[in-house]
Image (tube, rainbow over all chains, first blue to last red; front, side, top):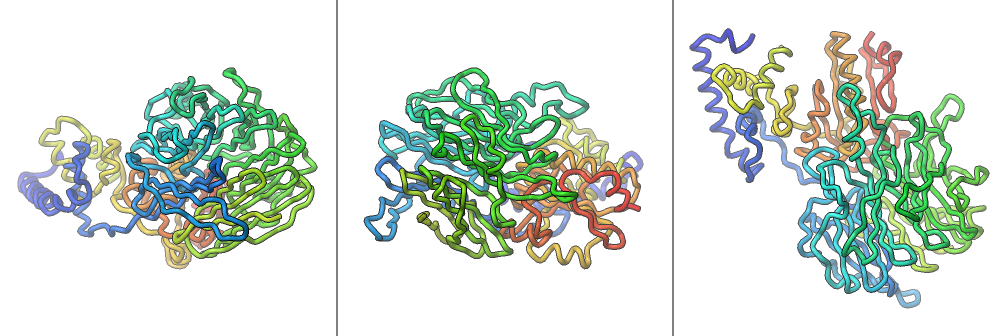
Length: 432
Length: 178
């Protein structure tokens, strides 16, 4: 049946019914959306009410993703969203002796009104540089799906005050700029990397779809603690679209990056690069799971400097083990150029391991991950005192219910795992 | 019914709506109920204006008493590979001319935020959203599944369950729909 065949009485009936529906639903629509939105809404809002059921209003799940870092004075800082979705920081000075960590009051950052991603792989971050510089970064999701902006707040007084948020990249299209990472190198240069789809947007289309595989990694540098930024630089074409990027300086103080890359033909392993110049760096393949997949693992790698000037890496992947896909979080020792020492590759001793990260200081290496079994989550660590040749499994804690991925922070020899759940932020000192 | 909706849906987004178009719009509103999130992208869409809660106990119930055959595409709002997999699955369903439950299950957001992605899942008969601790719900579906998406579960008429990451291949689809 189409409208073309509707007779006059039916038209009148329909018009009356539609008017009734509009009247009945206007109060609901205004309650849901105080701000008028697209013109089409006026037509569509009544449709929702024809259902005769008011949608159940549930409180949105709290975003628990935090960032953690040590300040130059040894205080541990965390940044995240509170229950009212306000950006807050909180810090704890270094404990004296065996005394417990004492947190200061959480401090809401005024002026940070953006919507923010604070969940899983895409969470607010905190980085301390020289000269009292502190930056907070996050992804601001936009209304358009997959679109976002990398936003930052900066402090020049060691975190006492922060600027209003600003956008980090020069490209301002409403497209993907997400999953940022930030770190200062040994010279105090602030490096920001992110996943970016500007090249996908301009690539030729095949049918309705772009011919561009994956996304790209872009980056920029700031030599004044985030006051100004250099141009957007492409680090790599064809990255995975939704995994965090690991950053750590090498022995030479120059920043290294490790990310999930899409190698030819469609293999999601990891690429490694040195962020040394404005030109496109060489991409070294760091993992060889040979995971042929057109999917979204949402599970980025971790990277830490090793005592031999190489690196410790941890990542999630699947590799063929006979006819089966062997999913695991794996560890490897990388050479200084980022290529793996294949004999060092091994799976973590936990088939439920997820979202692992790694820290190292000298010969000591700590891998920390979350292991979930139903409602119960356990925080586990694999600790080595011989640069990753042997590891000891340690259970750090467990919680029931919603919780964040573990976040690691380091200040010299001191390493901690910060783990937020819906009730508290736990800090676990990593004892070797 | 389907072509009728499509023509009406196109009229919904037109800037100048005539009398006939208004009637088409009214019909669309009454019978197909597109949602506001879809309106924002001016897409014709199936009759989905709400998100159904997917909790820890939901999967067990769906396996026991849910519609068959059925396909569940587990997805996230950050998964750009998911719409393609859904589209391929939907194309296979349309080609089969069979009545099939084809559900998108959004794992990372709820309510309006989940509906905002509904236009990626045209042809969906239902949109669910995880309510609760994501890994716990995920493990209730498959204890071995990491949060790699799209994760697709096909339940055949006889209750046979097939699982895959990404779009199902032809053999899986044949086994599911035959």
